[in-house]
Amino acid sequence: MDRPVVVGVDGSLGSIAAVHYAAALAGRRGAPLRLVHGYLHPLGYGALGVSPYTPARPDPRVDAANMLARIAAQATREHPFLDVATEQIAAGGGPALIECSRGAEAVVVGHRGLSAPAELVLGSVSSQVAARASGPVVVVRQPAGGRLDGPVVVGVDGSTGCVPALEFAFEEAAQRALPLLAVHVADETDRPGWAAEELLDDAVDPWVTKYPLVDVRRQVRPATMVEQALVELSADASLVVVGSRGRGGLSGLLLGSTSQALVHHGRCPVTVVHPRATRRAGA
Image (cartoon, rainbow, N blue to C red; front, side, top):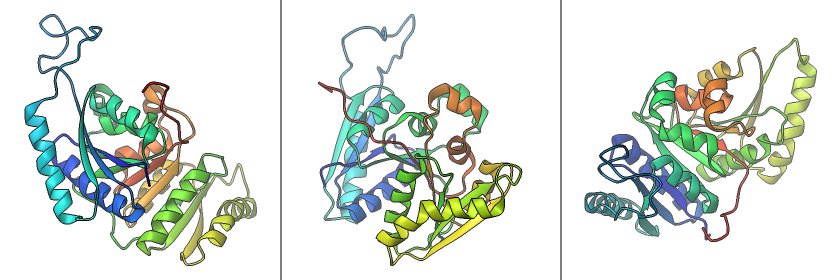
């Protein structure tokens, strides 16, 4: 496979946990692992710093190169057959990973455990990437939550956005020999129970045929808050997977989409699956 699993690395405990997760994901998928560190000029921007509009880019940092080399060596020791590479990109962590996602199998990023208001003010990398990247984005919490032997939970809403989410969830369940729980959260005032079950079956049945060895369970949960239901399920899950409905950037943070709620409050790794984009010409 040519597309790498890309993981953001800054030396924090959260990013180290993300590297462990990304290495295992790359190994399962036969993909190379690419450790990416986004950096800015050490003086920063502003009156005493460097103009963000200057065409000159700062040189890669020696301390970051040493950090990347150390973490890459550890990943290679733990996964000796894995193709591991490192890269520093002259951009903030979020923009660097968003651009890398265009050619990636998946992007993995650690979560620092900030509250939603704090992330809005401080610009959490995990929130930026989960909202705006291409393809699957896995957000790994530190300390880790959920259960290693728990099911892969996938949210199903009948939209086209849940199709790539179902594909990723079934692949993970099959490769990790885990059960899969497909969940549709239905508002009874909007859709009766029988219609919700039919919607769930229509979305899941094609994937059951493709992955006959996966133990598939289905659940319709009556609730008015989709986010709350999936966050509750994440406590006993190994992974929660949801699709993206195209609400990105600042609006996604402000409007409280399901994916952002899980990024903030999920208790296990969360994957937000976006449609795949391609790299821009010349990128």
